[in-house]
Length: 170
Image 1: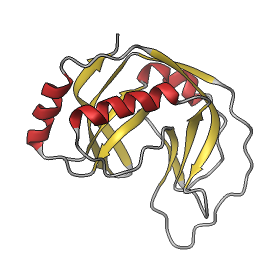
Image 2: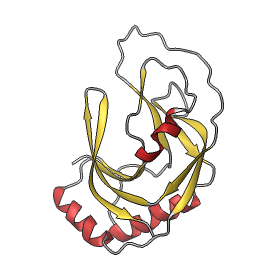
Image 3: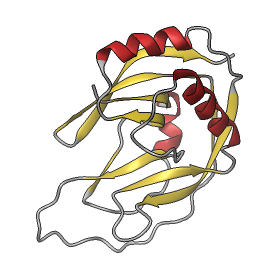
């Protein structure tokens, strides 16, 4: 199953929607904001119960994050996505490390903390790319109080996320 351990940011949609983004017609705005901690392209169903068991007594304090920069991935060439990067992501990295050490299952991708804001769509070969500029990002403050395992279901250019379980931070 395609899924990820991550932090749901639905409560911050209004703030994140206000970020001034590049005018890129070939990209679509993300509908469900989140921070991916660990991505799994194909997680076996039986690992979901293992994760639940290993994380049932998980303890980590709530913390604040501040998003303050717009980043593009990949950094070279035409970007596939634009994302919000963080001013100080040390606590987020510590959360990632603690979860990773506990579940001891490798991720399919390197950890690069961000919130995806715009994502590339499939385009016709004759499409002309926009060159319009965008401004700096105003700071966005977030309180992180839980994380969970989410099923990721792409369909017709839109990806939806279904929570499989949630862990509260203390």
